Length: 559
Image 1 (cartoon, one colour):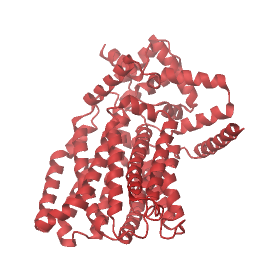
Image 2: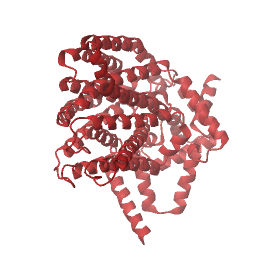
Image 3: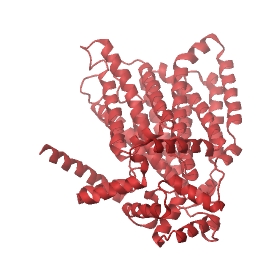
């Protein structure tokens, strides 16, 4: 009986999620906004700090440790590709990471002064630091999952969903901040704050599935047909062999795929990563200096202002995605502009003062734009290059988070000591000069153009991808209308291997690097139907993976 009741509750939860997703297919992608809202609330100190805090020292400890743990998870992901894929391909494992973050948040709350009054200090110490690591590990893994989801989207849709996610952040933030301040123990964090602190990562993990996966889960649970379920599982194993048992041959294939990623990613990507690290260090250094020494009320006020600035930012990018000519938007210039702004802000520190909260807010806002643009660029790279999202987001997000943790530590611990023994003006002017010079050396507009330059005939440029509408990525005119070399190759292979008309359509989309969810949306069929056609294509072409499929096409085009 208990199991039956649990199953009914589980089915009810998935049924609700299924209905919401049917009404709004963007819902899973906006789960990223819930994760970002948790980050904003946590590092504003509103969720877990008590009234005995006189400055942001403990907040700095949490930020540095949790962010560093997230960075480690992201940076290890590309090197442990089979293991990470195993986690990210299992929704239960993703939920487990969300639960890990929630447990870590509970540990942090419990380590506060009011909940462990009668317990020795070492236990409080262990709870706090283990909680920071757990939150970092859990949120880092969930962010990678969202990287996978966004990597399947066309650039214009990425821009739209990222902008909508910013609105989600603003809504959740002010809903929690403006909630009643009643606390289970007087002086401790509020009950709403505790619940948000512990549950937001779990909710984000629940939503970290593509719409087609959520709908298919609902269908399977509603149908309760064991035979059909077994067929679906067998079909999934045929199409996605990485989820099967990893034998030595398969591990070798994954290692080869990793080496291919290293070889096919343009050098400009690594320049972008280096600049990202530099800028994240700079932005967090200024922010960490201010937060560590100011009263929490000032930090909270600054966070509120930052949230108000996020709203017009989101609206502007939504308009770009929906109405304006997004193809003309130069993300390379925007990234360079952010570097210049951060350099100027560092040079302005002696004028405004080392502990100027206004300068800190502007710097943090520049950092928010930096993170927004970086996420979009990483998703663009995955979509255009048809490469591993774990590889791209692992390095991209990992370096950004590592730079943020290092910068906050420098700002909280090292910079005040350096400026106390040297001239403030000289220190910040030299630092600003170094930032600007390195920014120009590391990454320029030419590097940006090289990063998104098509490397094959069937690859679209970023401008072409951004110029398409939100419902379809149309390919180049010569590829669709003029029967280019790539299209002729697809047609030739389809005829030689006796593919049906629908299988040939699925084959074309697979060859262009699209996933099952995108193909189902374009062909107006169910996700299950696409997987069936995909299985038939693999069988008729005698291939067993996407990599073998692409190799077959390359060989045919060369011949």
